[in-house]
Amino acid sequence: MPTNAPMSGEACAYTEYDEGESPEDYPKTGRDAEGVEAEVWAALREVEDPEMPVSIVDLGLIYGVDVDSETGTAAIRMTLTYSGCPARDMLVNDVTCAAETVPAVTDAEVRLQYSPEWNVNMVTEQGREALREFGLSV
Image (cartoon, rainbow, N blue to C red; front, top):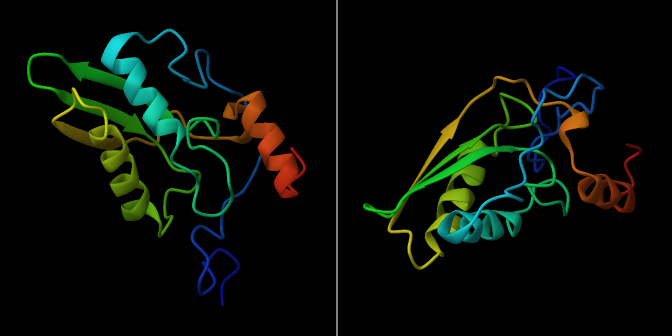
């Protein structure tokens, strides 16, 4: 089996925690969000990575949240730690469902983007603590 192939039963076994520059303004955390947008960020904080008990927000996977107050549509931009992650569909579904738990949101649209490329320096300090508790050295 190639070293980059996920093993049976593993969600994203190829995830590499390489160092790299964190682009300016990342990680996005929703800290300055207000109203419905803040509620969506809070709901997304409840979604954990399938490999470890860390919020996808704290992993730096959410790149943006915009809510159209007229239509109730939440547009969420996110990335993955590995572009070929077989848990992609599950994560997109989890993010969609989490956003739609917000009462003012009637529909959620998730768009995956891979630029800027995710790296471990995009993880929040809270996320780093959770990764260390999980046994990863970051």
